[in-house]
Image (cartoon, rainbow, N blue to C red; front, side, top):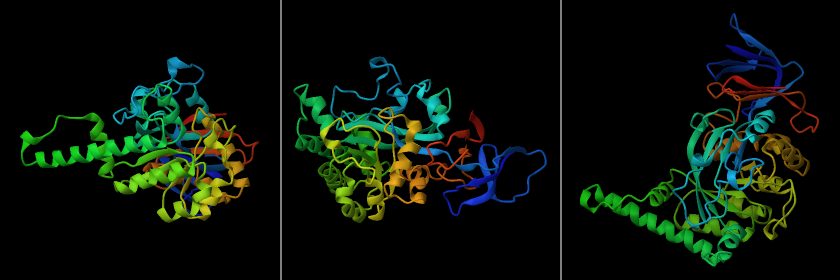
Length: 385
């Protein structure tokens, strides 16, 4: 058994515990509280004068699928040959030897989403993984966690340059609708085949994934920056009665009340960096705070390698400075993304029964001088400064 003692513990499941103790056994959190008795032989990690919090969770990255510092040879996130590729799996493109994973654990990021890129209208399925391991299969927390779709400039630019559809926002929407209709027809045929096997259609890997969306087993994860693209994504989701969350949500602050009424979760970012395309013109650190006040569940994301995943706390600090309350900002990099990803039963807070993914910091998480002292994943120390 291992114990972290004397730290200021941000459980993200209640009040902050001053001088808190976390008991860890078999990779799980056994207990958390103040002045807990320690079993004989417990290994002690003294976090006196330190801040202790759940491992940071990033709900939108391309780590390991767009490898750091390689170029084409390590760029496996976009299959730019067909605008509808729902059968692709991010899991099959991840290289866990990508050096960016070392940066992630050093920065306190312990769990994240890896998703296909946004070149295609339907890009493939995203996966939730831990940031430490040699075999990606052993790092998986949940696969799939959603189906990536994309609106706006990216699919327009990719396929108009090939003189193919889609080259307009109308065509982007139509391709998504066409594929969802095909999946609905496929699902109905499969239902009829339960009574007569001869009526079963040939197996279709693309449609099988879309059927999972129609059955609400996984949500659509919609890349959408502009307000009009966000509303189009939601319009189509409502037409087909499927679950959806918005990735990037750059202009979400312009339609915050609408998103709040719809109870649509937003994964906001990346906010650090420049505005390299038109649909990023209204990028603002104020967006998460405005969305929160409208009743939207907000997660902050790095979109690694757009900016390095380990810098997510820096973005969080600037978002807090721009108006998102401190507790809500901490939630936006811990429990909120875990809930959006559907893995909050395992990560995102320090509670008994959850994975012992914990980081120890030498200062407040939003202080630019703060360094990660230790990162624990499944109770094991995977980084130590």
